[in-house]
Length: 275
Image (tube, rainbow, N blue to C red; front, side, top):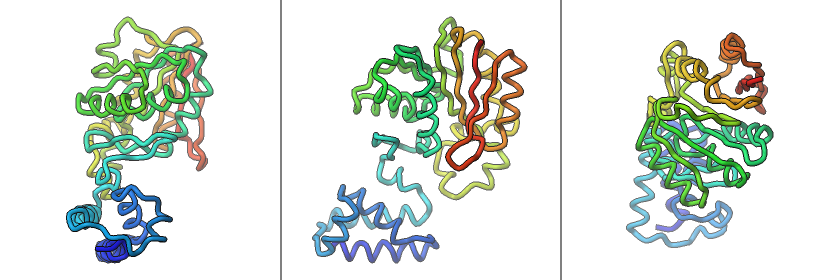
């Protein structure tokens, strides 16, 4: 098949599946599968694609038609200046988390010790180390499968990061850090049921938490004083609407709390400072 024929077939499959922008979805998958810029696809409609690859690409369109995320189909997702391997063992990195990295870079002291809790694909620590090689970074996660993906991504970008298998603080006792980041599960069970179909392909243990999505963050914060160095800070990403609750909880444990809005103006991050 030619590139033009594949574009037409993909758009028809995704249009029948009810996608609002089937050609855009098709072009994203086709560009990724062929490792070609979109412009080159448009400029080379008669490019021949061999039968084996054409069949694989058509199967990609069918997978997307049942709302499997394109990042899982292609096996990678962009994050800041990186292209990270992603599998169904890890969440797909979100643009909001890129903003968290920007926030953390402003807070991180020179040669600081940083911990990323619930690292998933390793997006946060790898981006931090890639952009700030002076930082000494540890990343922890409960899932061995997620840690395998994170380590693969770290090797790809030659970033030296210490990875630890840990259920929150379990295997981090006695250790303290200048800066701690956390993008823990924060979706409530009720919210999860109302999410888009794509979400159901992602690991539920990395998405939801009891107590209206707050339980894991509260457990982490309950021991945070023991793991932050004097003058240190912890940065949390959470759902719009949770900020006041986490700020109040942090203040009850003698932290100074700051709520930070994302680029859309939503209260997305909380910083807890140890004074």
